[in-house]
Image (tube, rainbow, N blue to C red; front, side, top):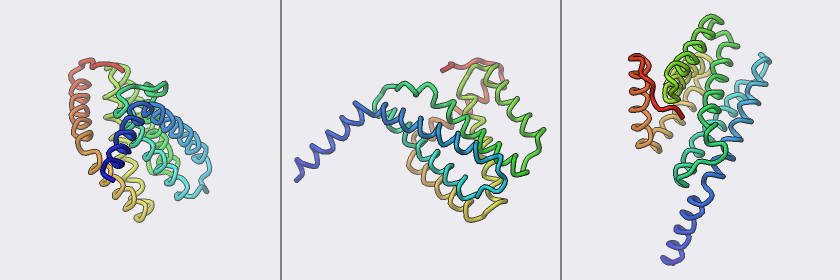
Amino acid sequence: MKVLLTSVTISSVSFIYEYGYVIADFLTLIRGIVVLFMLSLIPDREVSLDIFMIMVFIAWFTDVFDGFFARKSKRMGYLGKWDGWVDTAFYITIFLYCYALGFYSFKFFILVLIFNFLAVFLTRNLEVNQAFHFLYILLGFRTIYLLDKLWFIRVSLWTILVIILKWSRLKFQIRNFIDSWKNLLLGKKGPSH
């Protein structure tokens, strides 16, 4: 029995190493499609918050696992270079939804987007863009807290779970986040991706 489990574990690891980047690409593609669907929901003020939030969770799920599979396979797939941009589209879509519901003014929405794109353009550093993801997450948290306490609890629990599961990765991202803001504020250009 122990030999069988070891064999299954080894074949699972080799499968992930061999095909993980394909799975990561598939998950990134799914997230891109989900983002397009989310965008289609925004003009309709009658759309259910539940439908939108289910799409948010599907996108988050694919984001968590595409990175896992890509890192385990130690290579980038065809869509790997677009992953960060799909993430950005996802977070901006959530911000747009918050704006469409009237939680943020048009001026604030546009100023944040302009600042985001200028910061990325001036630094040519995608980690700076990830720093803005954090801002979009905070704005989304505020909105969901004001909209629906049950969804706020669900989102908070999911966030805690992801932090626990990805603690070592999170420490790396926090260092990148801090370095990115230092680069932005000091006018340094970081490595572009």
